[in-house]
Image 1 (cartoon, rainbow, N blue to C red):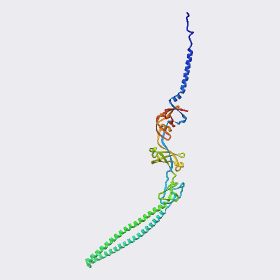
Image 2 (tube, rainbow, N blue to C red):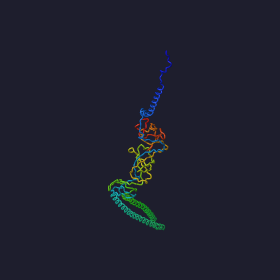
Image 3 (cartoon, one colour):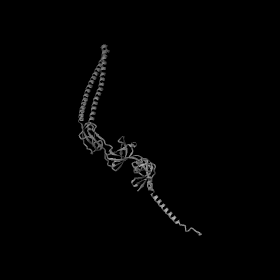
Length: 424
């Protein structure tokens, strides 16, 4: 019987093979892990449906703090603050002496009106005035004659009174000497009384006549004066046929044709005062409640910056627009023209230390309730609330902090996404 001392001949060395297999498995695992890490963003974007956007096609802006002016941009035109129209004072034929564009001075005759009716009326009233003056003179002579007659009657009454006094005195002496009877004496007394009454009545008639003649003379003088006033008014109307410029400036335009027959109070032409201008602006109806007299307005005319204040607001709205007028300061530094286009911003409110960001199309796309905030190469949707806005900036009330970077361009294409991938 043969004894087996060991199993060496049956054993097989497997240790090296197992190590080689483990090292190969480890290498493959590491390679798969690296590939997975490198491809994870693409795989995750594909798996979760994340949209990639070229960052160069987007507009971005950072949130910052500063002074925010709530304003609105509007446009309009320049108009002369003083551009009066000249009107026809009478009915007649007009002759224009100054053409549109001509410079005129205040008080210069720019048109003449021919009115035969007015000239005829002046002649008639002049003749009537002369007649009244003659009548007044004739009346004065009659008054003098009447007064003379009354004074003669007074003198005659006075003579009779004196005679009656003498006769009464003589009768008194004769009666005392019993030369005449008592009846004759009483008769002289009655004659004296009668003469005295006649003299008193004559005095009163003279006094009343003087008062009456004075009133009659005043009446005639008043009629003459009234006619003189009428004639003066007619002469004034005649002088107004020479139509004068009410301000210094230029003739804006004719409102009638040369040698046209015009009516009373018909507009003839416009004189534009070039010394002072105003801006006439149209503001959207949305801002009507914010408008107020005295608001500051910044204007741009032909590239020049001007300051102004709101001076007048139209009480009505036309075509969803409110018309306002702006008083402009320091217009001497720039050559302005009638109806020149002007752009302006009206300041409604100023707020300091406001968190704000530049305006953009994102407001419309997000309904002013959300925005995409950029974090590294990703933009995450962030809910926000906004406050007042200006032409350039909008106030951020909540949801963001200073130095946050946002996408301010239109993001309606990816508004449904919660976050997007930004690529270069």
